[in-house]
Image (cartoon, rainbow, N blue to C red; front, side, top):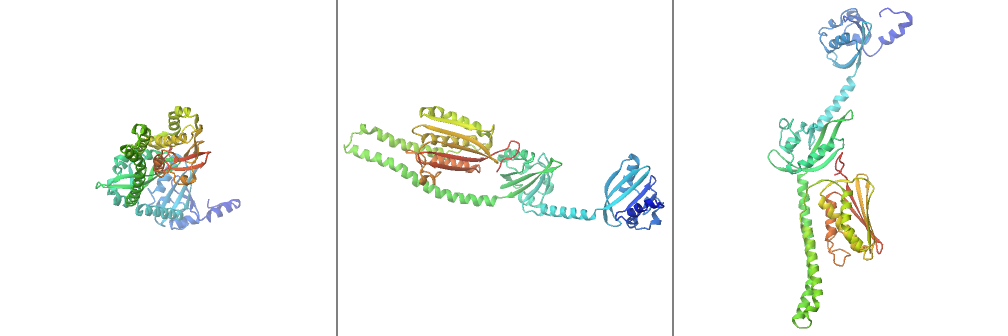
Length: 468
């Protein structure tokens, strides 16, 4: 290509003035053509390279990746592309070799700038990983540690060498292992997870840890799991101290309420006993009064037992639609006797929650029972479940006498109720259950028109994660 006719000279000039090195070799590696940029690449003038075996100019070119790739192209006849670091000029190149009729065009494109940007980005990522105050880690799809940072050792006590290739079971408390496995399986379905667990350090210390895990996705496939473990032990202890303080305050209020609720029937019984002793009344004629007041004390006692009874914390996936249907069937007979039309409508097939089934049934049982008790003259009680974003919304509406505004604002507090013989403790239990699952209860009511309880609970996705 040294000598070209006039019509091709413009092409020769174009290639010769390219900023990228470009040269042509035969199958022996003899240079047939090179442009000006190639002279700069090899730090030699054109005459020292042209018509000579390129692997001898400069020395030590033989058996480099360029030489090896060139031999592969000769052998296969297929074009190739690869990255090459040229130590002579401290430059990164993207190299392309094209084959045509025993002639091989070699094109070097300088990618040093982009390589430096990638390197700076990698340094930033590595710095963020290494010096993050939380335990940052990477897991394979079996849950084995691929990488951990310095904070991991500070929080859990295991060095990098001790943790690598070992499963996350190493640090998870056995009581939280099943739930952790559940979240880990979910994140492999490309949905990030957030949850709190108890972990065990190398020294055997229990720590409260907030876990965030996200999928590492390459070509639309999850290839690993990236995690951040935050030690929230101090925060939990502070919350527990605050909760204890609130509990003591609540116990004081509850004790005062209980004393008041029990004292009223006791005062009645005591008064009648005094009159009976004085002979002012004939005791057998007042059995009904005694029984009524004793029933009141028994009711309060039973509600307190229910409130204090520890519930099983066994958690599993349940379908709220099924639970609603089951609880509704329990009230069918009672509703018929009171001329109440009770219906349960679920517009979707499933509403999966990760929860304790006993608690959820207690929640719906208490609210439906209140709705039935509010309808002395019959009416309709409608139960509906719908989806809203990542939540299931359950509405329970009755056509009862409604709740006065002064009581509506204090729904969920003990001893605030519209029931003549109620205590308000049942709704307090309901609010506690919903709060436990990061849910929400809203109540709307109109006097003589009815009341609607709207309960929002976060869904658990069987193909994804619980919306913590």
